[in-house]
Image (cartoon, rainbow, N blue to C red; front, side, top):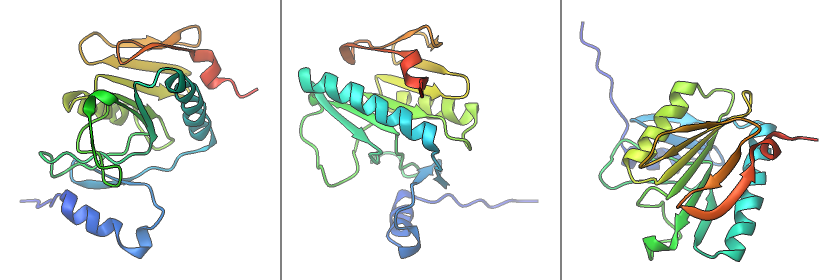
Length: 185
């Protein structure tokens, strides 16, 4: 038996995004298939808290820009149009069109696990972003209160609540308590 599975291209995906029924939905194209994220309050808290911390750091160290849910669409990849939860783009990237998807992968990609995300899917995201130019990826797992840190040129590290999250050479001088990311009190 032959199974014919057609993969959606970025071009067809962008047409689907323009349809009224998809307005306001958080859709991504992952390996030719549409994926929809359904974040929960904990997800929003962590993303907001990191936005505050990194945004404050960047105000004092203007080395780039922090972006929430920015679409990344690589010219050489017709089957992916990804949206990291948070992304840092270094000024070293130079000029880019602020009204279009990023044509490159950000320097730092931050993903927070949502209820429908498996560990395998999260790690696949990290691998994808690193393979396509990310210098650092943080995978945040709220239920385990852990962060997996994936530097492009080093060994991955798992941080628990006693750990400290650092920006390494991507956000030099940035540090945050892991415990604070999960503290809802």
